[in-house]
Image (cartoon, rainbow, N blue to C red):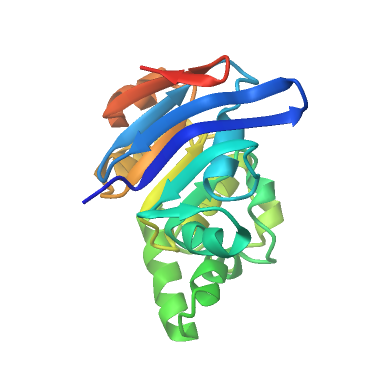
Length: 216
């Protein structure tokens, strides 16, 4: 099996003459759990957004799941197979209740309502959130929102997870639970985090983004 993602010569800038990414190369293989480090503002979140087509590169190629991806039509499949956890949970949660938020993705992928309800129950149970189905999302604590946001990603049953600061706002016990869950998942993942203890437990390799390029 080939790589899940292969980025070749990827470049991007928000302003002409000020590249955020400069001919970056990266490969993600099945089963890998890659820690993505780098200083604030280095472009780590930007890289995630490029990988799922939320931004358009100024140069280079994005190959995902065995095909070159260029336009919005190409990236629809990518976003169904690569789940991205945003840094700010409020950017991910937009339905009135927890169950509706978690069911949104499966329903959008064509699951029947009964199937979606079963996925919601299973995913919430995995994250210790059984009983949260009817909770009003915007009233949850920061840590609870973080777990529900992750539930919306896992409910899509993606092949790849792109996790932007997944342990933000979590207390020690919840972070330990989340770490165990992520370490046991079969999906390949790329994880942005400044939490070194967390990364020590889950990462199979590390890369660092600095000055627009990746290095081991």
